[in-house]
Amino acid sequence: MKEFWSEFKSFAVKGNALELAIAVVVGNAFSGVVNSLVADIITPVIGLATNNVDLKTLMYAPHAGVIIKYGAFLQAMVNFLIISLSIFLVFKLLSIARKRLFRQGEKAVPPEQKPAQERLLEEIRDLLKK
Image 1 (cartoon, helix red, strand yellow):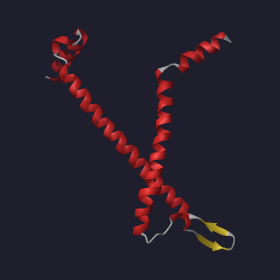
Image 2: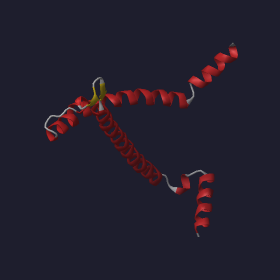
Image 3: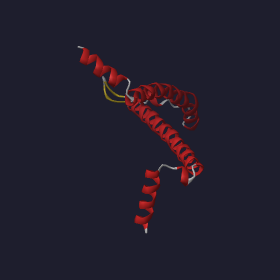
Image 4: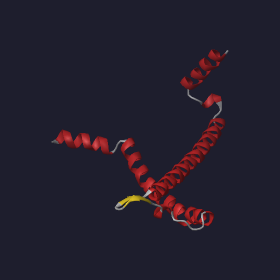
């Protein structure tokens, strides 16, 4: 039993588990923002363009008692596309910011202050390029 708790403790305090927990919390908060974006901004604009047609109410009834609610599916697809685009844009902006930050960090460190192993690897890389 002691081994179980030891393994659990090492799992729970690993960086990956903590990062995953943080990602879930941030993702949950982000979904609230995206849901508000869809419901409060994008859907009214789509309503203006489509003369206030609510996609969720669109349906097809080929026979009595058989109803195909294709509008709910269309609304889900629109939500998916907007959420995917929003997540892509956030990660794209974070990627650009990270590249700029690390580029600035690299310029700030003079070559003589870098560790010997890093300088040696850079020399090997430069020789291989030639």
